[in-house]
Length: 460
Ligand code: PMP
Image 1: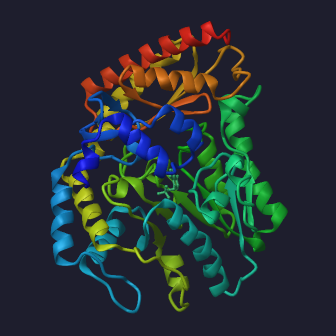
Image 2 (image 1 turned 30 degrees about the horizontal axis):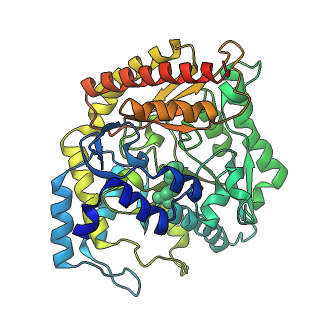
Image 3 (image 1 turned 90 degrees about the vertical axis):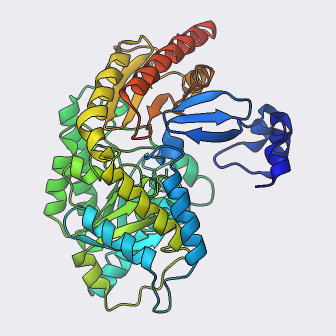
């Protein structure tokens, strides 16, 4: 790093950032007026900013730092790999040891016959791979008309043209003529917001049956795949009613379409098992992976593909790939990350100890006057903010309450994210019981402060 820049005071760093750096999902003029928060270093679950403030990072960066910050083993593996082979591609009939080793390890960890990995540099790229892969698979089976992919409203599958089209975020679709053709969306299993008078169980079944109805409407002979996150993450950590996935599974079992589980957030321990598909008892044909695969220490993602799909594609040249597919440094770091998650029993500890403890503590937040529901699965949780609990009412202007509580979180040394008026967490998996207590204490203070602020604004 440029040593002079690193030692500039915060205001100067912010000015340079505003002058030259375009931030994702940001109105840059608004941010420039305020100044971006400059994060300088991190360790465990703790972030330190350029003014020396410390925050408990209850978002693990962007849902990715599963192992926590500051694991030097990963830095050492990266440095060693850079010295030995910093880059080579996996095109043109070549391969290298880190990609081989990581693919083998993933095949071992993934459930069922998911034994083949197509690498990418992140989740968006991997989902773009999936769009082309499932369509090419069906064409190779002599069924080129099986092209349509069914996804869900308020799903998040990435930000590229293909993956954002798979996603169900209309505010993204509005920018850049999306969705691309051949992608349709059914409703999400979000009972609190959309369940009306139905019980959660009835609603879960009703939402699952939309999949059957959509397949029948389009024609099974035209549908390539259904894609879904086991638990919707960026849509607001929407934990579906218990009836939802079993009914979806039943519907899929009766129809010959592929199922893609987007495990970019749910994978690598987040739900208390290696994959969300294991927690929710799903049998995908393809899993999208990224984020926790390397705990965010290197950009890497991919698609883990079943024997059936890989075999069906094996005689077709799949004209697809990325310069950084199976990048050796990223692969070596991912492998080391998986080793530590496994050998230190971190995934297991989440499943048997820290996630149940967090769930117990998280549930207490539902008693707060501002909270309509508190949902959690493993180490991903959400709170619905509401002006009227009994009516499950949204705020008149969506997003203001979420923003107020998010600001209050920062003021209380906690990073929680707001999706509209849902507060969400996804902490590093190494979070301890004491740190969970601190997380809950700070979240409670932030909710109190947020409530006071919203009352001042006349919103309650
Ligand atoms: N799928 C899911 C479920 C995600 O949450 C994300 C990122 N938040 C992506 C795909 C896209 O991954 P990336 O940002 O690495 O492209």
